Image: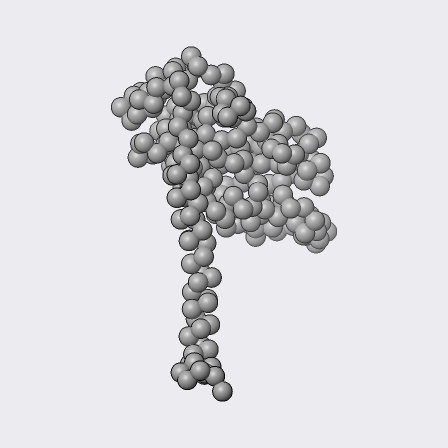
Length: 244
């Protein structure tokens, strides 16, 4: 005999199960909120000797890049962003600054992806340190420094699959293409045995990302002895709007 009013019934069991399912459904959103709050509390600005006003929306793209070049070493440049090495808490890190509207769009998307709890849990992206929150869309994104990925490293870390072949593997495993029965067996085994491939399948499949960037070795790095994506600014929408 239990406490009056608390004896389990079909109705109370159903209500309890419903509440549990609802809690599980909202858990990722709750964790994401906590992570965002943590980011706000621990937000790190640009280097202390830099003038933050140089990265306001009323400053030209060229002036922002020029200001950074006077103070940091440039380590990469693309069609939309320029990357610089800056010191942060005694270690090398990377600051990516938009050079045009494409770069702003990529910074915006990348900062969302790099702060997404599910994405970061896949351990396939370089950790983000901070991003510009003073403007409506970020003029810069600050990430950890990853060593350059070599072709032989990539092949070793992806169980014999080269960066040129990874497109075919992931496209099959995300249901975008068909392959022979022999390749089916091989690719399925690769996903089962290799955590990086499994994480990449998860990332591409769940977020609908275009595969092209992942075949470029320059978009990969090595961080703490593991492969990481160092450029995640290209969504399908951005590709369609700026690169089609």
